[in-house]
Image 1: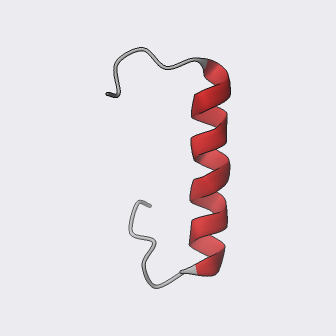
Image 2: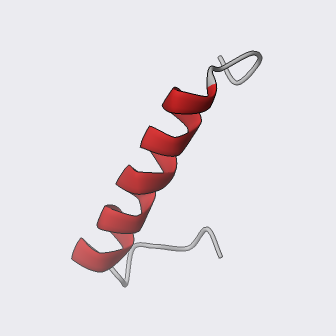
Length: 31
C-alpha cells in the first residue's frame, strides 16, 4: 500500500498527520 503514491496523496497524509498531532498530541508517536 505504501509503494507508489502520488505526491498529492503524500502531502495529504502529512497534512492529516499534522492535524492528528494537534488534535491528539498524546497519541502522536511518529516523531
